[in-house]
Length: 237
Image (cartoon, rainbow, N blue to C red; front, side, top):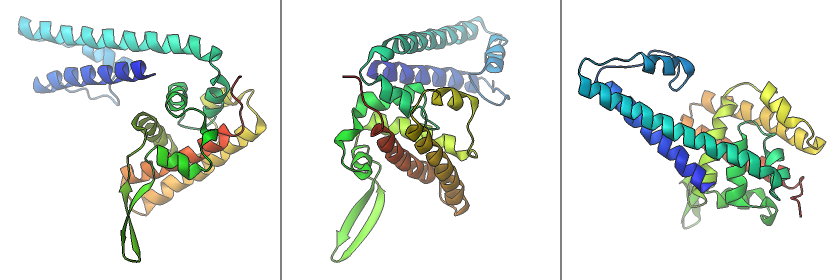
């Protein structure tokens, strides 16, 4: 998974280099989102007056394409390998949670292992660096920002996944497919997580909290629900 993570970061950087090049030359995509089909058509339509600029532009487009192809090959290999992994049932169960895609689940399991080694959800949160720091002065204990002292890769994918809870709770078609064949207890935990975390996201935003703080709070609770699901599913021995 760390090879896949490195490939993903490499793609992100190469995409940023291409966008920076375009911005320097006054080319800005006005569509809704970069790296979609419409964005690809827009890129293909870009023409530069100077041959040297066109060469540099096309080279950067090709570099991004190569990086994207590499990432897709790695994802395909993972999809083939995971079913024979002893932790495959856990990976499948984790995907019941909103914001936990196949890649997020595989990354989390490969970095954390079996969550049953943690006696409490808070121990898992601490391992991920998702608990507030504390500073004691006499009898007073002040809480600060997250410790960020745990597993960086697992924490990052949870924070990325936490953004999914900004939308109202509902079972989307991709989630419905992922729920098929899972134990009832896992499905119930996943729905409880959705209703709680979607509501909490809106409540914290309404209270004026900054988005990064809200997302970190959601990621912290996601870890607790993953801990609960991990206690419902047995790895293959």
